Length: 167
Image (cartoon, rainbow, N blue to C red; front, side, top):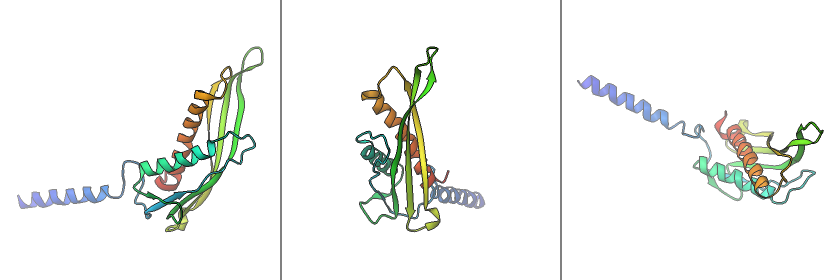
């Protein structure tokens, strides 16, 4: 009977110690306590006001919500910086009378990630995603808000995965 208790105790010990390495967001053990997200200016040829601030805040929110890292203004263990390099609207499908039936908004962001504690994790990489919408709609108001939200959710999750989740 004592052997059974020892086996159960050992099994519980391995289970608990295994859980400390991974969490529900997929991040492994992070060797950092703080992070900073510097402002991502909009350097694209086509300027859409406010998307730079929105992107910066979206990335900050995602990291805060999916980790226990503390956001700092400077001196963070992890630093995210870069710029929006492309904001482009292009026709995707044509109708029989050779007009656009669908347009695509594409946003590209260049990101430089620095980990002060583990320099092997540092990278500079471009992330891009798109949103398709009917050509009859103007890219403004709710359509623009939905497009930006969809694109930024995907790009920021890709940045998170590349920098912290290692997927």
